[in-house]
Image (cartoon, rainbow, N blue to C red):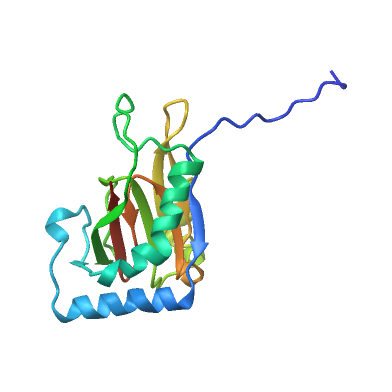
Length: 202
């Protein structure tokens, strides 16, 4: 037994990719929010959020999509051999991506987004303003003794290769402001005070 060596063989699963946006793109997104708030177009009836506000944004001349998203989305699909259809028996080839919808969510204390998914090919989230810190939130009396502390966390749900539903939590604090994560099936930009969401389709 002493000469036996065990090693981990990690089975493949679709990854998340993460980056920190440069200041000029963060400022551009804040400008999009400010512009939209001047003449807001309500998006709540099309979204799952049990939150204060969801408004559509305009990505003028596809600036953000072309300069930040497009290359990374195309590389993600290519590098990880993404089948861009929800029915795995269908085979679609991505010839061209575009942003279909772009919106911002404002989420305040006690408000939440229930578990949901999106249409489109990829999903993307940017946290813009986080007024809480996960360390403080996980010390709350209702959370502290839980075996799954998640107050104020952001969670991705996914099915692993054995068919089990799992969650991947991202603890929230101001350190996450300007951070983005890209995953299969659509595009979101999220904030706690504001949630920017996007949809990228074929």
